[in-house]
Amino acid sequence: MVLKSLSDLKNIVAGQPRKKLVLAAAQDQHSLGAVVRAWQDNVIEPILIGDKEGIQNICAENNYNISGLRIVHEPNVEMAVEMSVRMVNNNEGDVLMKGKVGTSTLLKCILNKEWGLRTGNLLSHFALFEVETYHKVIAVTDVAMNIAPNLKEKIAIINNSVSCLIRLGYTMPKVAVLGAVEMVNENMEATLHAALLSKMNQRDQIRNCIIDGPLAFDNAVSIESARYKGIRSEVAGDTDLLLMPDIEVGNVLYKSLVFFARAKVASLILGARVPIVLTSRSDSEQAKYDSILLSAAASK
Ligand code: COD
Image (cartoon, helix red, strand yellow):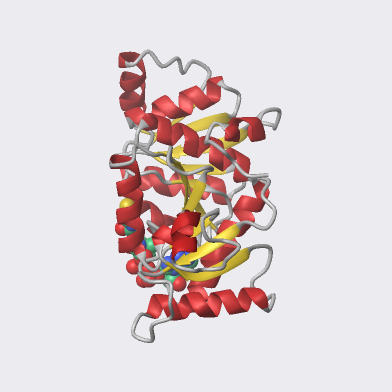
């Protein structure tokens, strides 16, 4: 099974029990809009932590009906985030979501050694895109958390993403490790990592997926381009997951897909005790809603 569109996520969560979602610093219009919609669709049971008056004003102005929803009043943003993370740590939530708070504030709380959501695994960001010019949904990692992952970290990032794809119903997702070129160049570290990751996959040191690389972006997503360059690969042109060399390449690709290609996106932080919805402020309400669906589909 592969996802053809982000709306397929709805079929995965249909009939599952509602997941408890804790919205940290909930006084944010797009986040509240997405959460209320997912609540009305029976996907989640939200708990809103933040400035109660701010939350109620936003909901009143936008006609979001929140009667019956649990709101915990904590006007201080840092305290609201800490309280949210502690609740999830205490098994009171299945999913954590970022509201009106900076990304690094939330990430630092999640990484807190005493009351955060670490598991011993590397945490990594995972984004799923629906883009008209590709024949299925394509996942991209890591575009927002790990800045310049080394080889060991790239293995953990692949494992987090492959586990997530398998929970969504994939078997043996195809992973393209990106470089600027498809040949190994000893001066380009990304190509060296790619070759090692491919070999480790062939030797079953990285399992449950098919890895190939280095692949340049064109031959990762276009079979014509791969054929033209004479590349024989099971992954080329049919990639399910693109592994980025670093956060800059990843973040620029993410934003290019959204702003130039009008792609739809859903994203999560993986590797913590629960999936974390951490969309950026510029993401639409639809992206936040689709990310909530993804978190519900990915949570155990
Ligand atoms: N997974 C697990 N543990 C981690 C991770 C990770 N990905 N990153 C750091 N840790 C642990 C370290 O082992 C250490 O124990 C502790 O956390 C602190 O590590 P530092 O000092 O490297 O971490 P910080 O707090 O300075 O930075 C962690 C961030 C995630 C905030 C940092 O990596 C970062 O700023 N990433 C980019 C975030 C960003 O700006 N994204 C763009 C959004 S659009």
